[in-house]
Length: 206
Image (cartoon, rainbow, N blue to C red; front, side):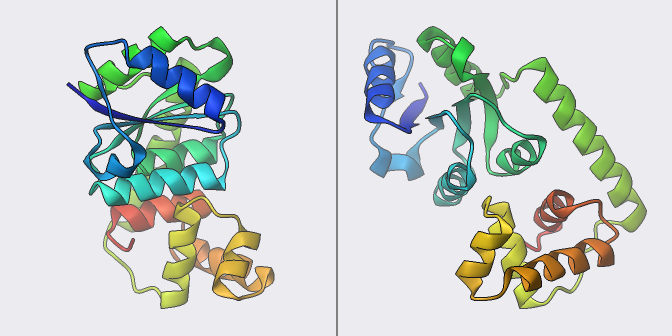
């Protein structure tokens, strides 16, 4: 039986989802302070933001990568999807077309190791993975030497922060942050910042 935590942008959505899921004997609802011991985190949000991705990252880290995430949102971009998958996203439901019953089924499917993803997003993700694998087969998967500042920037990118937020957090100028990202992308012969983050994670840099 999967242990499930519900998080939402507003109390009404959270309480309504909790009330419905609590009636299903196939799952066990637990409180947010037990996130480290949770099997599935259900996140309901209208807009996927840097905060959303940071929450995913913290959930993954606190559980040692065990917690799988079911995200219910209006939309997710290609870059956000790639980052979210690295943080444990397993299933995605389009919020305006999703019922409580569908959330329960997504939870059960995710707990069984299967993913519930709209075909268009699955195609998007597979295309990105093919491009990344093609590039990495050319440059290899050996870890490279990166400066600590470069690693710090990549780590914050992986948490979903934008260049303005990273500059503020590290007390650098936004121009310097952009320069660091461009340098890493060019030196590793990668496509963009998302590819750089994924490469760093796969090679153990992050």
